[in-house]
Image 1: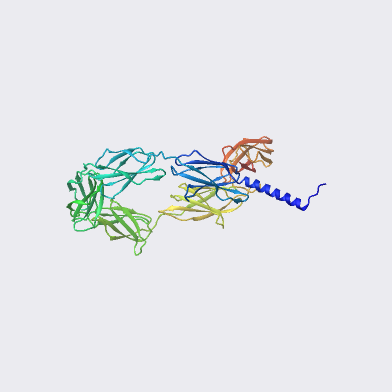
Image 2: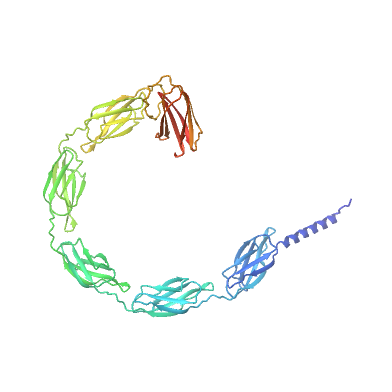
Length: 580
């Protein structure tokens, strides 16, 4: 057998290491580097021989304006936004043997000449009016912007043309020479504004001065103003002459306006500002008018309080204009208010019996509200209305229900009932019927019931408590909150046996079949209840002695838990159903 000496082993290891190193280095160096699809602003780069991630660095040859693209392991990348007619150098940096090689393997390419047209031709100004003009050009292939301004100024305005070669300029001054210039995207950059052209707007046909200004229909607190000759939006400023208490009304383009809430016997000045020739004028064309003496009666007369009851009273007065009434128990500040637009009378409600009340008025006078004044008083009467029920009766008492009734009340009524000594209140609205049905009670339990009624304009609160006791359940069963239809075909049969209640399938997709055994042929009721205790399905059928089946379609019901309650005679059984 051949033996390896130490020298032989060493030589073998060195040869193996050099072989691995050469192999590793061979996978770290690109080959077939190629720049293709070269345009004025783009190029496609590719290479072979590298399987690791690669970064590409590229820049105009001879500069350090480096840009970078990550090619990952695709061995290719696309460069964009290059300068036209420019020599570029590109290099590769790859991840090899656990480290990055650094940028190397430089290659070169040159971009082509740019075919983008950077100078407009056939610049034209047309459709020129006093305040608008259209401008157009040809020959540009990229986006453009327009700058325009009155000649000799720097009052620049701008319009973005995007990819269009025509724009409309608005809100120009009439009879004014304008310069317009273009900036365009060229060779990847925006040019400066250049290629100036001029046009001159025409004279304006808009009338900027009102004529036939008139103040008419003058009263103590209002006036109608009108004028002619303006076509633009107009604002009126008005104020007591000699003051700066300015108020304003926008007449828009109506050429007339009505002013209200003026002070009587006062000289007013009014002037006009209008939008004319593309801009607002100042307030001008001053006119005056004087309001009349106020004929409004500012003090009420013939104040009366009448039709007084325990809880209401009517009050009236004479005079003109809207009013506010304030009323309150005399000597207090428990104010209540009523607004009276023009009727000069109002009905006060919900007053306390046997109470002295004060009422006073606040009225509009000379266009402003006065303070409350002109106080009057009245006293409400004793309350003679009967607010207590009589002949209260609890009847038709079962283990879970009862009917209650009463006499002597004419208002809306609520009934409250609860196990005596508890606060487990339940409520029934009896409306105006003087009767109510109480349900969902516990068997063999004493209940208290009370009445709350509207009486003489007020709710009494719950009064007149009485008690009754529910009956025991005949089988001693726990009665749940199900109230099934009463079956009157046969009397209760003490020998009825309702057993082996089941449902299949359960949980349920669409349909289920309920089965049960019974020893009787009398009618049975099946009620389907949701978790809120609401009956959603009910059926009454003739039973067969022995096995009975009933198919229920639940496809239209919401998913959730339901209870099927089966009653035959005095027998009740139930089963829980789950609808998927």
